[in-house]
Image (tube, rainbow, N blue to C red; front, side, top):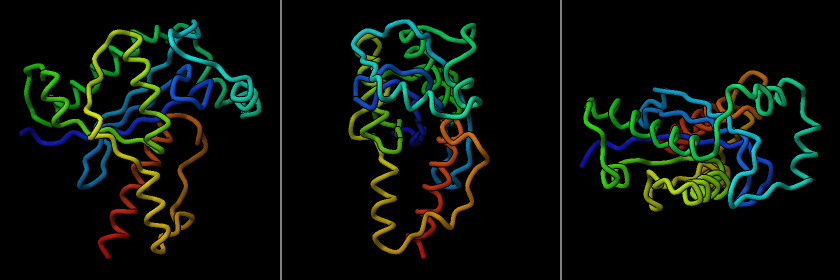
Length: 200
């Protein structure tokens, strides 16, 4: 069995449902021992209607109340945006590249290799991951992870807080908390802090 590959995911969406329209995603591969980021990617997705998704007026209104910098990052720059199917292919390629990097191999991993070795993280996992599984399904692209290898930062945080962990003691990242790459990096820092807390 190959060495596990760990990837943090964070979506910016136009709904809070599992079939939400996805506007942008941040992806960060990280070392599960040192929690050092190994690779980063942001995928910005076209505003065109996405098959099998919904848009909530309340979520759109929430975005309109955010600062201009965040709105610019998530919703503008049409020239960089790609279709949801292309975004699924880019996500899949990021997973493949992360595996090659970890395994130091040039050969393209098969789907069974990915299902055995790829560990996907989110906070909470029930928000971001089902949205991508829905997108992959409607785009006719294979999901590059197995359902048992989906990991939830929020559950670990809740458990740690019940045992005395205080998240407010962590130094916040710079502004831009609703930018997906920032969120991924923050969630990796949380994971590191929780792991260190549990090892005391």
